[in-house]
Length: 159
Image (cartoon, rainbow, N blue to C red; front, side, top):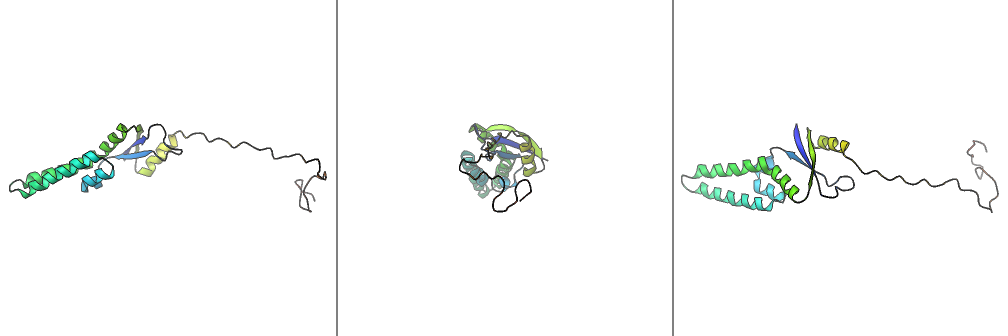
């Protein structure tokens, strides 16, 4: 089972919580395979630039004789660190921008986590539509007949 951190923007989560974000806590394969691009995708600009620079330095170490193992270690370290800590960094970035932590849910998948959270979330009460008065009294110029017109069945079942 995975843990999902739940965040809402400060002030308003939207009418039906459409702005609520669920961030899975755990290893990210996309962040492991493409660390700098994953960071860019999640708008972690400074960290993405740092990852590009460190990967560039590691590639230069691969080209130097005798330092190839160090280059591989640095590359693997950037990939592994981003995969393990990337989602926590995303969470911290959103909290620093004013998002509010709403809780933690353990579930098998995202849809189950959403079901668990939204079953306990307080939605605003929808206002009832006021009932109109439908039994309008006949106007003074009416024929005075009650019931259906043109031979249709009336409410009492007769003709």
